[in-house]
Length: 244
Ligand SMILES: [Zn+2]
Image 1 (cartoon, rainbow, N blue to C red):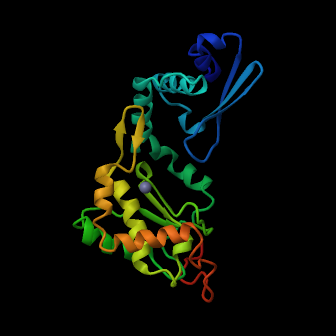
Image 2: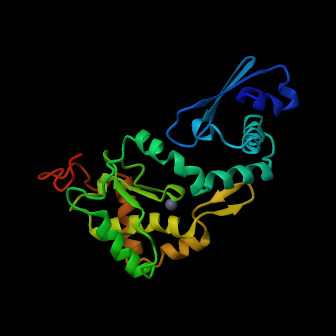
Image 3: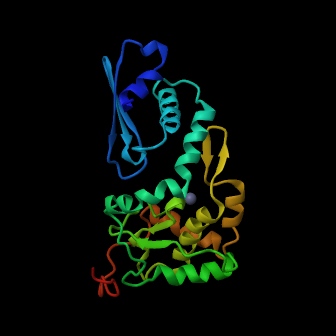
């Protein structure tokens, strides 16, 4: 059965006269989109799901139709899909593809001024009793002010914006940002009904344990708002970055 047929099979009754087309698409992230016109709904499904078990595609179809049709979210189907796609075993064969599609990753923890591994070792000792395995740590290539950091637990990957590779920003601010991302790896996600809560009460409490929490939060806010100088730091740009 093709992808279009699977989606056709779960189509809500009131769309019975609308045609459905669904195909796999090479998005960087695990994401799915759709476009609706007069009598066609055209879905693009992340190609990471190519070869996924039929029951997972069924669960996804059930869930996506609830989104498209603004119907109540089918909890069981949503949870089944979320569980499947959160597994490291699901991501393992796609890791190289994901990284190749992530063109903004430097693929190195070593910046011009700061080494993410140094921050990691200190944080691991201070806040995780040294028990955290070092994930892949990398700077971005571009200086994003909107996405300061991100973590991808099933890929065991933490990404930090190059904005923080800057001696004008105190190192504890970078440490705090990295601490936030490491907490995601350590604590995982809390499932609440149909959605996933990444910043749970437990997460926020752990975050507050950072020794300069308030000042660091102030800095992050200022950077996000553009109230701190974060232009290119002059001299030695690229120093220490291994040449591929
Ligand atoms: Zn977060």
